Length: 213
Ligand SMILES: Nc1nc2c(ncn2[C@@H]2O[C@H](COP(=O)(O)OP(=O)(O)O)[C@@H](O)[C@H]2O)c(=O)[nH]1
Ligand SMILES: [Mg+2]
Image 1 (cartoon, rainbow, N blue to C red):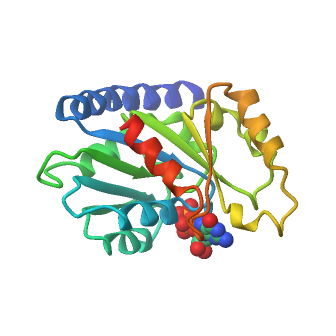
Image 2: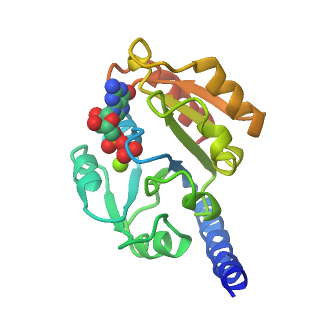
Image 3: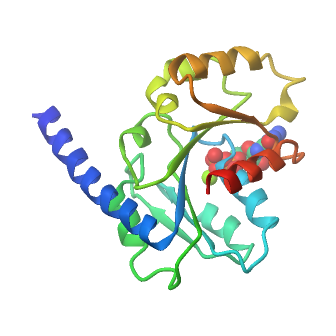
């Protein structure tokens, strides 16, 4: 019984995600879904992104967590609309949660919407959220084998953000091997090397957003 039920849930998710995608396209909203393990730096990357932007920019963030609104509070400091989705146990965001959170919010059309998914390299992969692009973050403390262990997540991503490169001198992490592993599961994946702590590589991330968005 488990498999048919799961399929039904995913079909329903795809239907809502399709509606969201259409709505985003009509309104000129570019939406990016950020996926990673807990602690890879999704909120840090968003902090560094928003801090450099003028308040006139029509950007917003929906951030998902199983519990707490810590990330929303971290991100709200920059003056852009931020909403927390607390999933209450679910290990991923789904399209229905995004649809509900966007109901009547933020009251104007957005040019860019960031979705910070629940920290997890497995569950978020199967849930289309209507996004135009998917970015997976991998930090250098996680091991270069992760693209091979979680191939679906990397296979469905447009971009891999290799974060915490400031720690490369201190951890045994073969950067080239991590990139090769990601390209084994997704030959087209773009790769950016960044450090949210030192700011290295963030220009390239901003350029990616401008180019894709
Ligand atoms: N050294 C280092 N630490 C980082 C970097 N980016 C994030 N962190 C730290 O990693 C931890 C988790 O970051 P967070 O943004 O909360 O990750 P999230 O769970 O993916 O949203 C925090 O203590 C951050 O300060 C980085 O580039 N270098
Ligand atoms: Mg976070």
